[in-house]
Amino acid sequence: MARPRWLQFFVNLGLEFWLPIPLIGLFFWLSTGLLTHQVLSYTYGTTTQIHANSKHQIQFSVSLAVMSIEAVIQRQEKLTEVKVYTADSVLKQMEFEFPVTEFAQVDAAIAQVLGLPITGIKQLIRYRIEN
Image (cartoon, rainbow, N blue to C red; front, side, top):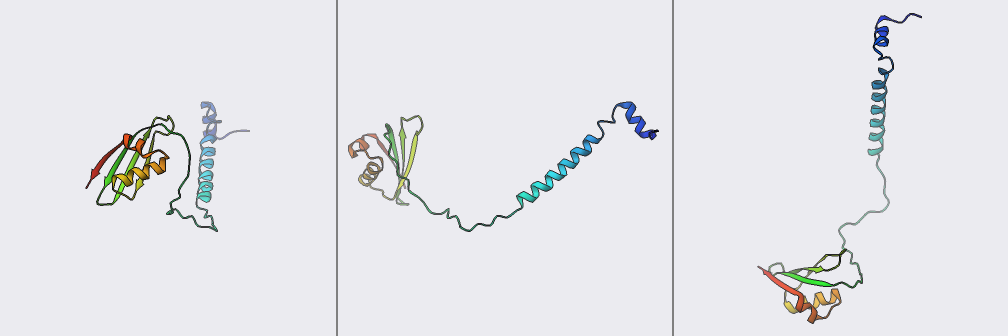
């Protein structure tokens, strides 16, 4: 059977096998694009709503070697930001916020959260007051 002249040219160059590959690639590209669009544009109906604005408190109990405590008292905002640095390899730093600005109240709040005596807190804490 005689082949058209243009096809014979491609056969002579060895491109007869390679020519359909871009067409097959284009077909897969378009079909996967349509499939991806269909999947990503599908809306999922939910029966329950997620409330992301609520804060949950987590209770945990571990024994930590506290290295230092840094407390930043912000008098205008009436709160104290506390960073606790530990010697643990996994938990290196903990951050807390307390709605108190007096030294004794900050010491008591930290002692309550960490489960340490107030005398131990006073030895480790360093205060910084911001206006």
